[in-house]
Image 1 (cartoon, one colour):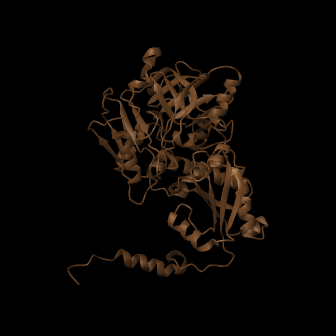
Image 2: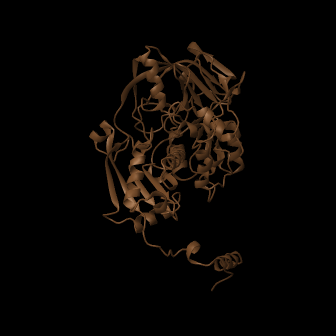
Image 3: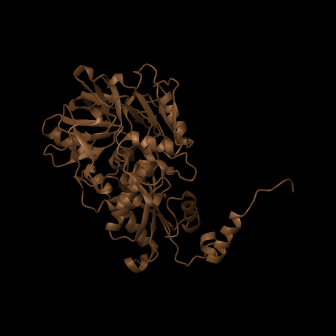
Length: 493
């Protein structure tokens, strides 16, 4: 495993893959950064490092599409794999292995070092001015410029037992304040509630441009009171290095590009939103949220700020959430005693659809006498999945021969094995997210709505007409030899 311990190491790795481009022309923070990010994600273009942002200090740089699908042919998950210390050609299901295993491993707490590159420059008090940085207006229709789209908030419980890393969007309000869309049951919201109940401001740090694995574990929805830093240590087999903040009692990744420190003022409300979101739409509402007041900003020399422009799939909202929640789903369903081979949140569905494949011997292992019983057991387990079940509106339960990461395979299994009427089961009252436009206004407001289960399991022994399953090994080997020896057509027919 190749642990890339800084964003800059990651960019070097992307450059070696020819999956990074530099734009030296001046770019406007108003809409142009967002347009570059959206085009790159929608067309599987390379990531882009923007070296000159109009009106901002030379040297302040922006990285777009940091963990979207890669431009490398046949390796769409190359950026994800590199972020997690793996070979860029690692197949999607293999990306889950380490993330699943680390959930059962002994945590390795981080270590605090004396100094780190993230504090090469220290801005305090009035000098900690957010407007000095090229935070972009991403979509035409957003309520303002967004300070955070893929950075990690660090909050710690008042008793110091639990430090949480989580991602939440944050909108610029003025030079020293921002509004962040968060709240319970999100874990950073739960910790904020603890401070609020004590009548105290909540200390926070916002980390922009951390080492590439940190955004992934920050979206993972690990169980309450599990520290993401210690989980990441277990994943890599060695501790993550942190440094102490300058004005709040928190620690942050030592190699981060930018760190914003401050306090949440619960009695001071500022507007937030609207903003284009992961479902692919821009809502028409804004809210009033507690002000996140800045006390310090530290940054590396010539800092690089990663930016995600959320919208129509596939972007980082879908690769990060899809992969990490798939690892959580797979671990959780197996721990529940269900015969799950893999669970995969499909990025192309804006992570609304969960494809679950089950082992071939599920009948013998479970005692279920029908596929409907198994499907309902999976659906009920998904509804009780803590801190994350609300992402999924539809669940497909598929046979073990289906690759849930292959959209063609999933659609074939769904279309040919799910009965149009008896293969559909509805869980009428499940947790849902308010950002999902497929639900009614009332359902989104209450956070409850239906989830649909598709039973795509067959009782008969299917003789599949495919290259891998229909032909003997000798024929397959001979076919590979013949294809390797094939030549282009010379001249005309």
